[in-house]
Length: 217
Image 1 (cartoon, helix red, strand yellow):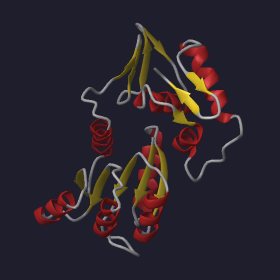
Image 2: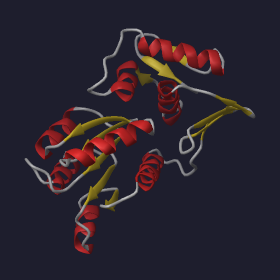
Image 3: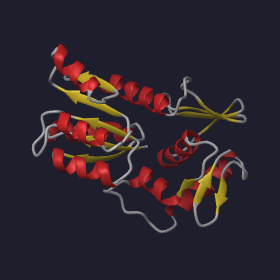
């Protein structure tokens, strides 16, 4: 999952980036509201964590603009503004959730998982395909009753494909979900992860759509 973090506090931003990466998110971090708006209008993200008090452009204005431009990416506002009117305004302007500082990282991650489920019209927390089951919260994968150990990158690829089950996921989208802006992408890195997943889960679990990408289901 590719997540855009917009937070101008360097200590908090760095801690959040590391914490979210440890949860399997590919995190692109910006500290300026105007830069965030440009990125949201020109690139694709699965989630946004948005502070409000930003240089360049206030977070509420960023939110208004992307919703006016029909960007439907789920947005969680993360801010020190805790007045009821601020929460109401944020939600009314198009935020999907609102969390005030200070906060617990576990709660933030749980809210992000909930936003993903809602954006995919999925009520249950587990991701399933035939006898394959993934629990994103516990970061566990089972094939039948047997637990399968995956690397973090393998888990991210499998989760993304299961989140979009039945659809062809373009290669470029998977690479963005894996590496974001900061990571160097080797030419065959994605193929290596898919090959390892097939070895662990079965050769037919992931289909290759030549010239486009990959699909489960």
